[in-house]
Amino acid sequence: MARIRVIFENGDPERVIEFNPAEAPFHHDGQPGSILDVLLGNHIHLEHACGGNCACTTCHVIVKSGFNKLSESSEQEEDLLDKAPGLTPTSRLACQAVIDDPDAEIVVTIPRYTINQISEGGAKPEP
Amino acid sequence: MPEQGAPAASPPRRPVYRARVERIRDHNADTRSLFLGLIDGGQLGFVPGQFISISLALENETRVRPYTVASSPEERDAIEICFNQVPAGVGVRYLFERKVGDELQFTGPFGAFTMDRVPEAECVFIAEGTAIAPIRPMVRRALGAASRPPLSLLYAAPDSEHLLYRKEIEQWSAAGVNFVPLLAPAFKLYDRLIAETQRRWVDADSDRRRHFYVCGVGKGVLALRDLLRGAGYERRAVHYEQW
View 1 (tube, rainbow over the protein chains, first blue to last red):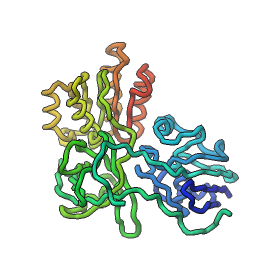
View 2 (cartoon, each protein chain N blue to C red):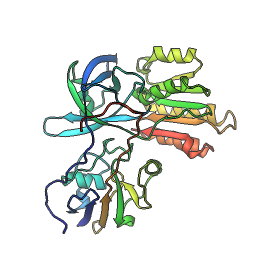
View 3 (cartoon, rainbow over the protein chains, first blue to last red):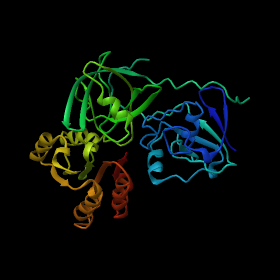
View 4 (cartoon, rainbow over the protein chains, first blue to last red):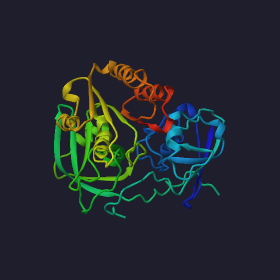
């Protein structure tokens, strides 16, 4: 079984998920078998404002361990990550980073700040 | 200690907007715009090209789906989103069922496919069908720039009905935008877009200062990106969004 340990920078309790990559997809958003797919399928909320279509950076995660066990990032993902706040050398978009190794051990941090929100002023939304 | 089988982690506190469907516009038999007014007043701040993430209250769950804002940040009265019917598209089915007065919730704006500042060099916009949505506020912004660069719009659809905002585009054309309409069967659309792009902006000259804004559905968008970057255009001058 593959394993993902999820650390939340916002202080929420850590989670550990064990799963069989061959059973992907686990949900309906993101690449099948991606970190996003696994998390959502295990009822862990990870924002994905574009629906997991590689069109924003709200599912930005930082891979602390097991980076080389993930699928390679595409040029499209790299282009988006360039614009992600808090970018690190091991940043990935959770919707694109696929785990297909059944023995993979992955540790990811969900940044506190995953916003890809730029605006030009305007109304205050509901808190 | 890590918890196994613990309750779902708390979602981030993203601000949520409430909006009401103020108006509906049918562009053709399968393409529609909804005009959304913020219920609590005010105006959404966004940059041309961005999208909002709408909560879809489906029968058994709530999903979020992105919809590009087709109106301009300067439009005070409502936010326009534009979409078309797609097979098995739960999001658009939900939106097609909305009526004037219905309420929607969304977060945003999001997205990095934007034009916040108009480049000094020529801008070429390439889109097909409803992917004109992010391009529309970009062209408007570029047209309103104090120092406006040359502008071109290559816009493709299977038939003229699916070339949206035609009257407005005619006005852009009259204002100097080089409008290149392209009609082709859906399965040939990107082959034609690629050929036209190659002919006009790769083979025709050696100027590689242009900025490109490409939006569409499927891998054809990436093929256009690769064509332009491979031809020597700066990576960051080839902006694209693939849905």
